[in-house]
Amino acid sequence: MTAVLSVPARQPCQTAVPGYVVYSITRKDDRKTYVGLTRRSVENRVKAHVRDAMRPGRKSSPGSLASAIRQALLSGHRFESRFVVEVLASGLTEEEARDAEVLWVEQLNAYAPKGF
Image (cartoon, rainbow, N blue to C red):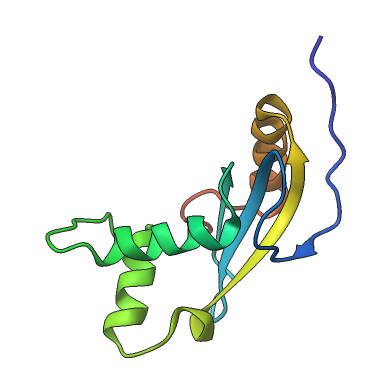
């Protein structure tokens, strides 16, 4: 039997919490959102998204988070001026995080083309 998780309130971005974290990255101008999960600190995971987007030779799909980050940075903008990062749930087991990620994707309508 699968447990039904309620969707918790959003929290300001935290640097490190125990367990898994579900987070969102939202582009400010159009509110297009990416939802992900990590065991790392959200700060380190976001830095990895940025590094990946800017990696030489990186080919990213149009409409992807990596493409949006790359476009913003190559246009001379700082990540923080174009995107908002939020912790949606923290301190979760892997199974809870996967379930919460699905719920948050649905709640925030983070499916393409409205989301990343």
